[in-house]
Length: 441
Image (tube, rainbow, N blue to C red; front, side, top):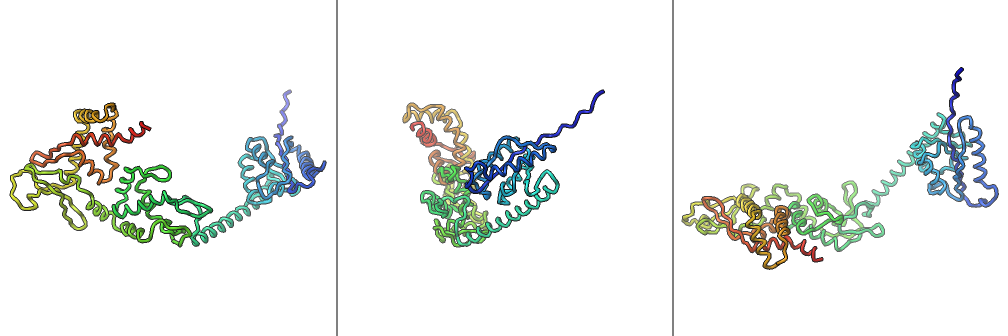
């Protein structure tokens, strides 16, 4: 006859935690910690039918306040809970575990995450029962209320401090450092901030300014190249005129300004202009990169000219014969859109630099000055021309064209370009300079 096996009782590993705030009496043979532990052990023994069994490890904090979680035995207890070594925490009173509702709620989070219950033997508090869980929820509701009240107080204090112009933490703006919770000017960075504001007034375009700064290897505090987004944040940050901002409202700050109000107003007068008009103004200041280089097929110079229709500027290269109303034998065009001609010249420069003949000439020319130059390094430098060009400010692009182009001739058949071979040598030397300096170091 086969018998029905008895249901196995689950063993619940019980950790007893004891605490005493004062060290007084701890050296006695039988002290308060021992008394707490003895009572808890008796309780665990009475619950043996429920599977309760005390573990041998002792968690006794003698001389530690219940107002903090920084207690060695409590830390060991929590670590063992996280390691899955404990099922039930047993205490003499709840305040032995914590006197703070906030801390108590943190402990309960750890218990719940690890499916651990706890029992207070003198207060009929047992989270293994429905009544114990109800009591726990009430306590946790008060803890949540306490957290929210404290949060409101912190926010109110933060707002009041901001209105007084105090620095309340966060990301420290470029140009400042923090000492004793106050912003102080970091002069090496402040010089960069002033330079950015001043150059923005001159250039009027964050896009072009970002290109110029990238070409000059100007970087943020984190080592990144300055981009347009960084520039807009910087020139709109009122901390630079000595103000503190809270929820969109500015207040006089305790810190010293890096930018004076006159320069700030100039920058923001430009920002208030429509982007389209600013782009037009920027184009009007863009140097004519073919000035002094472009001629008609009869040898007459073509000079930069411009006309304006509404707010839009149109740039041209116009023959001096047409400007002075002189007769000419030239059959080719006497006026051409500047953008079209410049794009054609730049495209031809890009094409010619990739040809084996031009590259061979560049290597030969360089070897007069640098006999040990590596052919592959020259080829690699020329291959970086497109990347270099895209990073240049218009004035630098114009300088490169003046360096590379000897003459541009406009005729019936199209546009003819004569390159300066010594210019290609100079360009390659400039492009290879950073690597040469690095190798020398």
